[in-house]
Length: 447
Image (tube, rainbow, N blue to C red; front, side):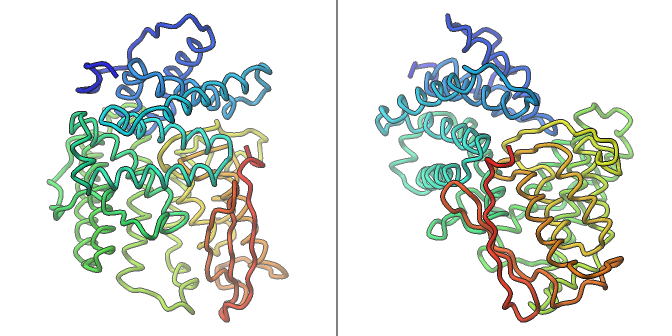
């Protein structure tokens, strides 16, 4: 690693020129800048991908080859036509080169940061190929490394890059951690997630109005992460966090009213996601404030149709589909790839929890409208499982309202688990919790 790389700070934009004699590498880097970055930063600015990773790729061969592979697999994911036959081979060669370089590096202050940068790219590479089990194992390894950097003085001394660089990288892993745990629960029960949860102090109420979309997003993330930390420590004051969220909602509404006419296209997309996130988190807080019994939990959601209808409405906008979805016209939404969560988790939750036949089918239609890979979440896998649940719950019934689905037919519990390269979901139906079914879902079948 060069001396310059030891004090890397983000550039204002990615370097424009890549020095290489390999046309495939030049093309991949260009595709990354023009297409992959465009999707990574589609909803929010993301300095890690927009400037830091491309800059480090210029300095570090391991990151550079991983980036070439990511660009190639991303192009395959987005393409609706077969690419050149040598494209998959090129992607695998670049991935193998990155792995070889990383495995040959010693655990030192030089290689530690590079391994963390490479590992987050490797995780995304595996999710794009549908290798869920491998992606989770890579994430567990990276998670352990971040945990060691946070809690072990020896590892902290080994980190020679700037605190700003480390914070941006840790933030990326924190969002990926939330993405994974929202599916699997504790990814590694023996390892605390405290290293990922910021802030570690009390979150104050927001100002009267926010000054930017990014400020509003950061404040909502701070409230959410602070609540998660308090829950983990068994210290959560749920009413206080509901008040905080109410203050956020008012400040955000005032910000939109005052500045909405000047929003850029990205600002408008960001606003839609924040509207979804706020409602989703409010539902979580409401369930914590008034926790339903195991026997009544499925009926608890019947009274929250307004929230779920709003989530589906904004989800359709975020996905770029008409309110009715594309199913009637035969069109499909653009394929989408991101390292973070956007709409798949929330739409999937609505499809499972909402027994209104129209709302839940609209959620599934949006999930089906185009391929979306958001971190570990794949829209086709989510839609497959949601459709399986709907089929079980409505079998033999004429469902026109939530009340038409009786307790003995309802899904009571769903547990995800990784099984080799695949996902497996264990479904439990009925108030007696005796009807169980395991569903094996291969992501590669849906990509």
